[in-house]
Length: 275
Image (cartoon, rainbow, N blue to C red; front, side, top):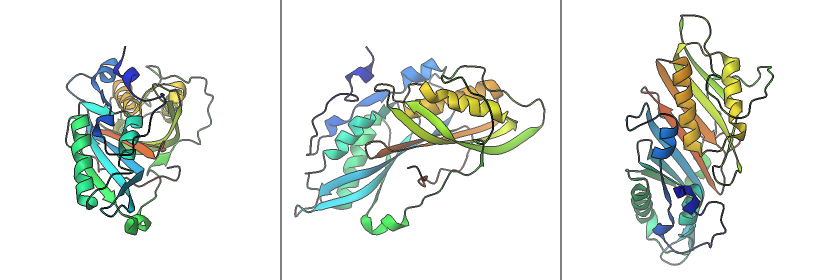
């Protein structure tokens, strides 16, 4: 039995409204990485950016407070946090008195770092700064207007191919057609994806077919992005590669994994229109 089956995902859960860090449910990254040929020597580095829009607590006088929280979880952490347990944990602050933003940030950083097994960065945005939140689509050339027949909805090796040229290309391609399903519940997860690379030109039709092929695939967000990275490296062998996905939120949380093998610019964490 896999550890995922012990998680609260897909089960009826009691919503605890007082602080309880034990609600966080870590899941080891190792098993799913071994499935795609990744051992302890990671072929990438990067971060998982989580944004929480349903964070609330009580101040010392019992008055409710709200904020938007962002978490940067390093890709080399041994664990991820199962998303429903993350939501349950955040909800446990609802009736908890916290002495200001500093204490709340320290608690969040302490608990989530312990869960993933690596230092996590936490940023809280107070209501006075909500109007400054950015919205932007992923930069690059969007390939979704390509006219093609599609009949493959589960990713397979060998779908991707390069153009028949020895020339080296540097380009950024995007698509809004990435959809996968939750590993446990089967609920749909929707995303936009950005692929930056330097190497032989990737055939755009094959890339779009490949991204669409995740449509019936069951995996967590982080695992899908790592699978995309590994498959592109295997089939097209670019010199440089970065894969970034912005998933639409579920349960007040969005998860945005970023993987790269070169010093690509850190994603801005600007929300897309669908988020």
